[in-house]
Length: 133
Image (cartoon, rainbow, N blue to C red; front, side, top):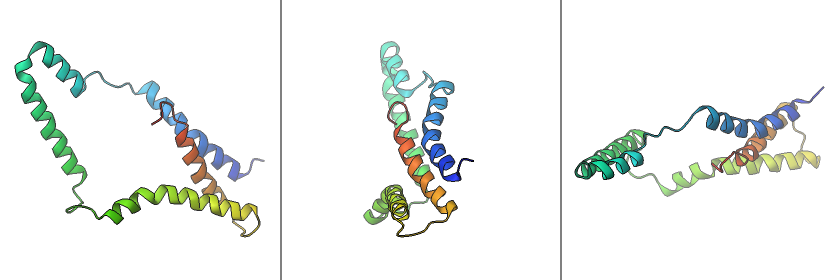
């Protein structure tokens, strides 16, 4: 019988690259990008290019405002830093706990060990995605 730890580790390691591959194979990028439209306008109707660039700029500003709708003012540097460090610290803590468990300094339950292995495996699996995303 394969232990749950092996299943979660392999799953965490294999799922991110597989998902990336499936996404790249089945979800094709459209050719209708703002850059393609600007290139086409520059070649065919250069007088309309300035209006299009202004409209795309306003659209991006509106999307940014919508995305940041719950942020009031400028986020504190410590909040930004904390958000940036959450995943790396989770991976480091998981590796530390797994090392302590391997050295018999602590005794982890199988479910906790499986969760920690999944965290570490998914982090490594995320590094294996095609194209270096």
